[in-house]
Length: 282
Image (cartoon, rainbow, N blue to C red; front, side, top):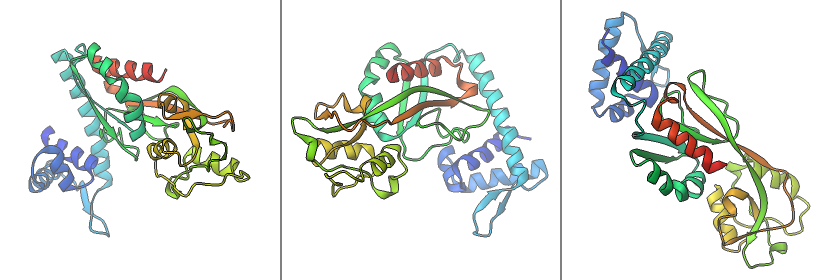
């Protein structure tokens, strides 16, 4: 069996479609389809089938092939790294995925110092609302605000911080009577949104007429003087447009977790980045 053909199956699994796999591999969809057909002929069994909706999906044999393919890919990557010296070299690309506010408010202000210490490493910061899949190799590292529920034996997860929260209002303003800025209903699952929903029902100040869909929007609304809200201290205390309020005192904490591939954890560039992320949140 040709390993190159198996790479096309992995790309299809991770991308979710022939066209997306083609983009990932830098070829056209016809090439992907042809290589997958060759792979099925080599193995002697059907790996893909059409679902009732017409989409192309993996068969049970296809899923087993993915499991073995990822194991083989891990071994080949480890061999390549060891032979090329990449395991010891602090150079190369590291992809980090997190929510936008973590990238813009926490990592970005501190990234210049990282580059001074590690000039050979290139960071790709992907701002994602969804939890990208490490299993599908969509990223090298992921920073999650909350205990991860996915991953598997090929992914390591480490709690690197706990974010404390406080009430904040616009700087230089008596914010005691300002309304509370909470979240769009689609983001009501966020811990700070739930806390406000549960604890501010009796507030005489009421709820502001604007409901942002993310923390960045909440911060900007508070800074604009529209109201007050509950914000992580680590983010709010560096913004001079905001001031911490003495009341209420939310009993709210959010864990910060760093996820990465177990087979990459020993690479020098990954160690350098994971240490930096840990230092940033400490």
